[in-house]
Length: 449
Image 1 (cartoon, rainbow, N blue to C red):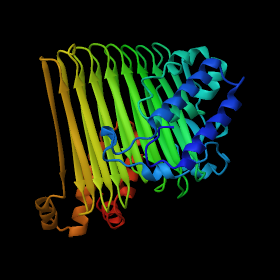
Image 2 (cartoon, rainbow, N blue to C red):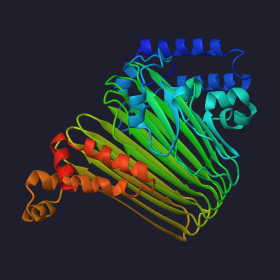
Image 3 (cartoon, rainbow, N blue to C red):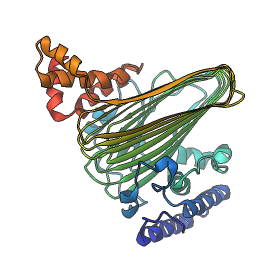
Image 4 (tube, helix red, strand yellow):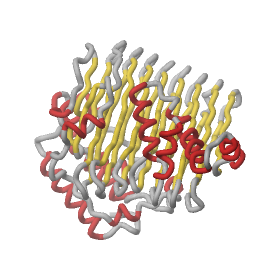
């Protein structure tokens, strides 16, 4: 196995042994094409290994600690989630699908009565009932196999969400996909597949939570297809354990005159990485990407985004913010590509970062590649501390310094949350943002609101 240099021999052998056991279990249980796809994906992982600092896209994010940790690939249990915990996590007015330790849990879910033409549920269940429906998406997985993590996902995924809306079918309520981790030393490989048919509307919230302070590994891939004239909002809310590892790849493909909104909020995890990409693959597409990451202690948060303007008259807006305290570190890489056929493109990108500590660090790299001549594009990035003049102004209005700093920090972060249109989600985010602030700031913000 040609893995990265820091992967231990025990870990290499562990992955090979686990895959051999999985392959035996799937004989007769899965279609032959999927067994072959998994085998090819594992060989791709064997070729790539996990990314190292020598890889350009991972030069600021070391996964050495994750490589050295041996995780279980089969959950020991799906117990431990009670009704009181679920009540705190579920969003009001949403259609809820719950996955515990990587497996769909129907007893905890409440998808409700769906409109005709809407199929929402477990990918494993959908695959078992109609394997032919997924062959074109899963058997030709070359675009997904871009690094060792996505190759691992393609080899080992066990479940995830399957959402398919027929043309003209809209779901008015948000679809809340709640992924809960309860076991330590567990590796969860999730695959979500979403198609929003022509003229349809949907809002999907992909939400990850750790219920205890344990080390585990979440590795998720979400594939999204937005058909002509459709509109979809996808929100990623990451609240993993502060000892957990979270790696995710989200890829969208947009049809004629489609609208796609990506919203990413990263608050948890010891190490987290989100790769978010959309391809404006027809004329008149619109894409909006917003995000917020807030880290403390020794958290490491990485966002890599990519917007491909492949056809004319596309519009994209990207706006990310970060707040870092302690010895936290963040990485933001935003790649915007305007292809030669994408005349009339209008694209903007912005990344702003606030450092609350001398030890906090941000590596930000906006990238703009333009191969067309009739375009309007801009990008920019800032890294700084709280403005002394603004602090001084608030103190002149009667606030002490701690309260002034708390209010300015919260306002900086809340600016992103206020862009969320779903009222229950917006309220939840504001609650979480207060909780993500340094402890000495939380009470001051609550009193000042």
